[in-house]
Length: 222
Image 1: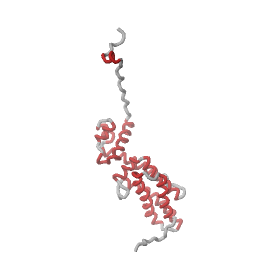
Image 2: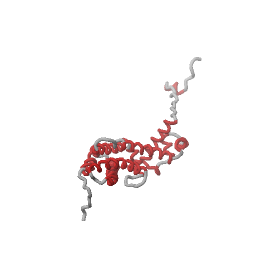
Image 3: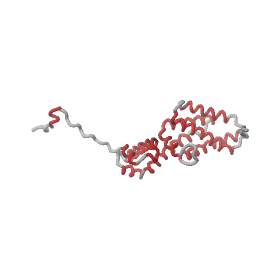
Image 4: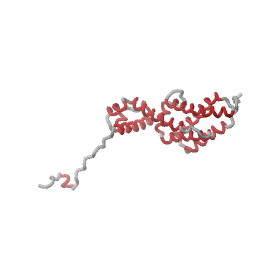
C-alpha cells in the first residue's frame, strides 16, 4: 500500500503536521557575544545589583551554567562589558586629540563624546551609573583622567607659546573635560537640543572663555 495512513486530523481538515523547527546552534564566539549584548542591556536598565545571572540566562534563552561557563559569574560578565565600553569611549575621545587647530580638536572631542552617548547610550549609562562624573574613583573617572591627560599636553603647548603658566594646563584640562562629560551625562536623558547644537554651545563657552584668559585671575566676589 503506497504512502502512509493519514491521521484523523488530516482526514478532517486536510492539514499536514508542521515540519519540526530546526534550532541553529551558536558557536562559542557567537554565544559569548549574545550574552554580552543581553547583559549590557540589563546592566543599563537595572544596574549591577539589580541584574541577576538568572535573568541574563532567561533573556538569552540558555541555562545558567552556560553563562558561568563563558564568564564565571555576574562579576565576570560585568567586567567585560565595562572594559569594552571604557575602551570604546577612550578610543573615540583620544583619536580626536591629535593635530589640527585647538578649537577644531575641542569641537571634535565634544562631538565624539556626544556621539558615543547617542550611539551607545546603554554603555554610557552603565559607566556613569556606578562611577559618576563627579566621583574621584571608578572606571568612568579613570577614562576622564586619561582624556584630561591628553588635553593637558595640548594645552601646555598652547600656554607656553602664549606666555601663560604651563603648570595650569592640568587645571584647565580637568575643567574642560569635566564640563563636556557632565553635559553628556545630562544630555543622556534630555536629548535636546540636537547633538551638534549641544557641541556648538560647549565649544562656544570653552573657546570664547579661553581666548580671553587672564594671566593671574582672581575671584571678584567681596
